[in-house]
Amino acid sequence: MKVLGITTQQEFYVGSKERNFRINEFLVVQDVQGDLIGEVVEAQTFNRYIPLNVYGDFIDASVIESMKALGYDVDEETIYVAKLRLLEEALYPVETGSDVRIPRFSEIKNLMLRTKIEDGLCLGVIRNTDTLYEECEEEYKDLLYTFEEQGLVKQKELPYIMDLKSMHHYPHIGVFGGSGSGKSFGLRVFLEELMQKGIPTIVLDPHYEMDFSDTPEYLKEEKKDFKGSFKCLQVGVHVGVKFEDLSAGDLKNLLDASSPLSDAMNNVVDVLFKNRDSYLSFSNRLQALTEAQEEGSIQRIQQKIDNAKNNDEKEAWEFRKDLFTQYDKTCPYNSVKGILWRLRRLYNEGIFSKDSRDIENYLKDGLLVVIQGSTRILQVYSTYLLNNIYHKRREFKDAQYKKAEAEYFPPFIVVTDEAHNFAPKGYESPSKSILKEISQEGRKYGVFLALATQRPTLLDETITAQLNTKLIFRTVRASDIDTIKEETDITSEEAKRLPYLRTGDVFISSAVVGRTIFARIRAAYTISPHTQNPFDELKMKKDEDDEKLMRIVLDKLPIAEMDILDTIREIEKDEKVSFTIEEFTQKLENLYKKKLIGREETIFGYRYIKL
View (cartoon, rainbow, N blue to C red):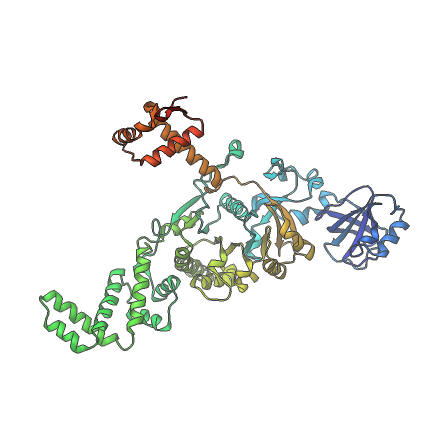
């Protein structure tokens, strides 16, 4: 292998007639400046059937001439040419004709493996490092499996180990990829690694898929049990907000997440909400004020008091009168009504039925806590939850700095899928406000983000800019690819490959490494509850229904067409199942077509019989 053509301090061409090149593999140039390590960014093969001058954009005249000068027969031999980019810029342009060789593991170990297994997250393998894998230490071997075309395959390339401790300096992770790219699978692997390290983690799960209870069939022999490492909690069922613990600011965030508040509505909360209010006391105050405002004047309210039928009714209208006197001018009727409607909506969704104490305790125990619910309900609840636990962690660290006493709260990671719904670009939302604060200041307090989305273009730009490590799976949309190119160090050649990546292949752009690594995510130790193919599910349901119907009709065969009504009545009496004549006839016909029962023709019509 030789350096070809005109060179620079950064990029140049390499040629060979014995060995083909692979994109993203590493090579060592033996230059007069010393050994220089580079990465293949483009590769082509040429032979006498494809003249070199056809590829004018890739190969220039200087490359062809230097090939001939170095002894290549460009008109007869198959020639392999690659563009090599040095990892560190050389002092001078590389000499044409310099030898190029495959590196030894010891030469690039510090580039590939920046941390030990016990200190990092083993997410997969680094592509095209199989020759280096043979030389690496035993501690880096046989760590994982990957899915390839031939199925599950034992590790045969260097592991990709994300340096967990480096998040203190380079915080926050982005996971980008289109539908079916392996993004959710990669997120699952990332969460499995966090659980194995005992890192406190909050996961917002709008798809109800981040359950780690089930082991896939392919790993039954090497089963890993995560049941004691995570908790799945549903908003309104297991967790919620204790109303008495809310401040006016918390309540406004919750109500705003439910439906945006006007300035007048914000003022209603500031004026009417009292410290330590319960849901009942606050909603009753709002209801009483709206009823008084509907009367329209003090005189009409006084009439209600005068005409009260009993003492309770009189006291109730006197209470309304006091509220009307104090708040009518500062709290417009429509705004009060709007707050009451939003409050009741949250109450009906169960937000105020539980508290968040369990989440805090689980985080202190180092567990991964999966919060499940619809996207809208998670937007509402996460606004309160993240504000609450982030500021508890912040208060602890501030007190520690001031050498004051404070209750311990651990560092933690916030993970969410469909992140563009929680931190949208172009408009404000309460959950976006706290996520933006964490993205900009969380590093100092040990609070980090891992945000996954199919649409990075729709994610808030301030937050996207703070994601120091980005895992980029297959992406097809041009606008998303443009965003990725702007926000990462991914090259134009790598960007062209994004729409064609296989499921599970990923470019990892990391500020820690300072360049993009091409990797493949390992096989997960657990499986999503939604992995069953919907068409398999449909077939299973049909088979199940057929089996149930066969059990019902088997001992009633043969069934003649003229006896169908009597048979239906008998089934209804015995099995408590009802059919119309048309439905039952169709079901018998289906069983016949599937060759589960027979059918014969008689002078009185068809008769269904046992096979």
